[in-house]
Each structure stands twice: as structure tokens, then as C-alpha cells.
Length: 267
Ligand SMILES: NC(=O)c1ccc[n+]([C@@H]2O[C@H](COP(=O)([O-])OP(=O)(O)OC[C@H]3O[C@@H](n4cnc5c(N)ncnc54)[C@H](O)[C@@H]3O)[C@@H](O)[C@H]2O)c1
Image (tube, rainbow, N blue to C red; front, side, top):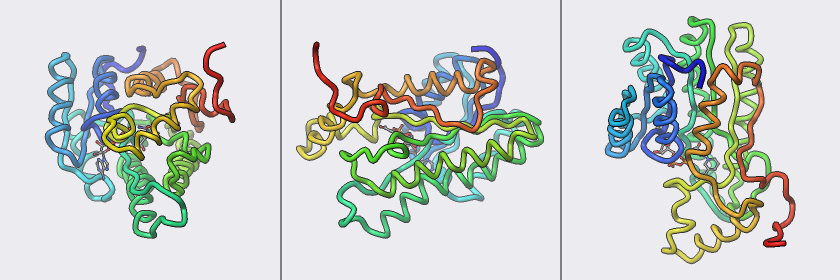
């Protein structure tokens, strides 16, 4: 895709799922990728996969990116290695609770806010000066279908709140970034097959299997998405072809948000 060769792209949460798919996709386009994760072996495996495919990637692990000092250290690695930063992809996230609102806890709420809203905030704070210095850039953040709809099968108020927050943060970053030629966009995936949702189709747990079936029944395309289907959108948004897309959220959800009833199967 045009415009990504030698761009320095920071992707959080590259140990698997959408982060790994993004690392592979951006590297394939010629970008220099810096990843990170709290998981060591899986994050190193992503570097191996990217390198084996002929791409350029470095990664820091274990790294808890919810800490501002860690985020600053991470950004500095990219600057020292490649002289600047072009794209920050706030992909990492971790929700802590499922279940009815009445059974939710303040502890789970706080952890979800920390790992799904504070984390992209501190990471962006750490990377912002490098983008301003570059005079151009993109801040891409992962929101969610849960930030748009109640998405009842998941039943997590905190997750819905944080992902709506990511969209609000994105709008403010676009407004403040525009004078510096910095764009900000969020992507809202629908249900995506990744390590975090594997429990819905592993068949090991009845309640999770029922949730998986319940969610899938409400997807007009009749299937969950693949991590690569999000990664390809991220690559496009960072390319020259997306130069006028700014301050908005891109839903990649197989049609869930367009449909308020269980879709009809067959004709
Ligand atoms: N899978 C879905 O159905 C779905 C749907 C909507 C949105 N999302 C969002 O997509 C993003 C990617 O999730 P995924 O589906 O690939 O799941 P995932 O769990 O495989 O990926 C998230 C990665 O982030 C890492 N991470 C978590 N906390 C971290 C921290 N403090 N510091 C560094 N790394 C950390 C995890 O270790 C993991 O590797 C997340 O923001 C998630 O909320 C996922």
C-alpha cells in the first residue's frame, strides 16, 4: 500500500491476535515495526514470524504499557533505532469482567479503565512529542462494537464505557493533532477470533460456548471476523489512500451494527 515503506509504526500488544496480524501486515508493506507486550514468548514469536517473512521488527517484552514511564521508554527505542515515529497503533487492551451489571465490582471496573482507556492515553502522551516533531503522523486506536452497542451477550458495562471513551479521545486527538498534520482514527472491531475470544469456540466451557453462539447469531455475515481483516483496515488507514480520514471511527463488524434483530438464515 502506498506510503508505508520505511514508516516507523509502533503497535502495542503484539503477542498475538490483532496485534500480531498488524505487525505482519505493516512489515509486509515495508514499515519498520516496534511491538511490545506483557507476554514474552508469544511476543518474541511475532518478531520471529515477521523477520522470517522478510520484515523489520523490534519488540520490547515484558512491558506493561499502562505505565507512562514504560510508554516513554518504548517510544524512545523507536526514536533511537529509527529516528522518529510515524504511526502509533494503540491495539493492546484487556477487559476484566463479564456478567450482569449487578455482579460487577469496582476493582474490575478500575482495571478495565486502566487497561483499555488509560493505557492508550498514556501511550499517546508518550508518543505525541515525536509525532509533533515529525510534523505528521497517525494515532490509530482500537475501540469496539461494544462502544457503539450494548452488545448484550458480553455484558460488560466497563468495556462499553472504555471503548466509547477511546472514540472520544480519538476525536479530541484529531482536533488537537490537525495543526501538526497528525490524524487520529479509531477502529471498532465486531467479534474477532483472537486469543481473548478463543474461549467462545473452544467448546471447553458451556457458558462461554453459549455466549459465542449468541453473539455469532447476531452477525449478519454469520461468522466472527479474522484478525487479518482488522489488520488490513489498519494498514489502509495508515496509507496515503486514507489521507482525508480523520477524527472518526471505522466499524469493522460484519454488519452487526446495521442489524437490530437476529438475522434471517437462508432465504
Ligand atoms: N477480539 C474481539 O472480538 C475484539 C472486539 C472488539 C475490540 N477488541 C479489541 O481489540 C484489541 C486487540 O485484542 P485481541 O482481540 O487481539 O485480543 P488479545 O488479547 O489477543 O490481544 C491483546 C494484547 O494486548 C496485550 N496487553 C494487554 N495488556 C497489556 C499491557 N498492559 N501492556 C502491554 N500489552 C498488553 C495482551 O497481552 C495481548 O497480547 C483490544 O484492544 C480489544 O479490546 C477485540
